Image (cartoon, rainbow, N blue to C red; front, side, top):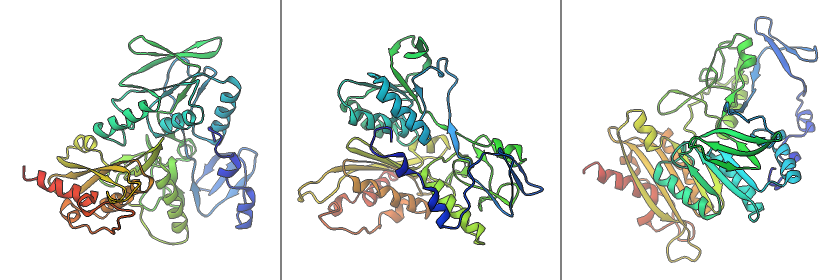
Length: 402
């Protein structure tokens, strides 16, 4: 949308879709919920009674308390309206120096799309507090690969830097100041450093919440069993650590929406927790991760063993072969698979992350994976000696004996 590749209409559901499904669409703000009376009070004065209620209030961008965050030319990207405002500003102001605060996948995707659409005449700078891009997805060695690739594509990567304020002139963005005192010129600044669950309505209704969102049980029921909640507004549980996490990704939101519908239909299917399985395209690289990175596992006091395999998209004798790499992280004590990371130059291998995700959910160990049998043909898989998941397990197994 921001880069002009799609229209707003193509990414939203038309009203007719609800009507044709027999759904009454009411477009108004919900101001208050009376859970005792089972009543929703709307801002326009209407009242709606319910037997069961589903809250899907989403999340808003987390805006750090930086001086200058209200200047013209400072944006966060979360909604269609945000995208339209950014698109219009870029078209009218024609900024030359674009600064992105945060190196998560939203920041990097936005920078990549804009740089791809207009590679000449603009400067793109990414500033990240931590030591490498995609720090919640990747360990440092994979993060360095992404860093080097983005720099080779013309992005300036400033890792391990802290922005202390946004500098303005005549009410408009003029630059950003770093903790070192250095000022970087900027015509537009993008703040994408996370999101905060919208819990105000739930809190006002007396429902239990936490810093990560509305608290729900495994059936997505809130502290009032007649009120369910799903998506970015709810607190999730990490599948491995069993600790509360925000889990604000497409996968959990979609599955929770489906699961809430099943619960309302009488099914008793539990939400398993999240592994934060995600994927992003950055120019001609595809990056994915799931579960715990090695750094995150160590923070949980887990002793790890890991292995990285450099593989390829096809058998080496087939034309058009492209390289890809996978890192698997195991619990050294139990052998259980804890996480995986992939960087690929081809689109197909990156979806192996879903296989890794399923193996973690299945409680598989490095011993199990040494005998993982994969479908193979020279046209779409590497030779058996480079089948990456099983070879990574083999390598980790050898490390256990060192």
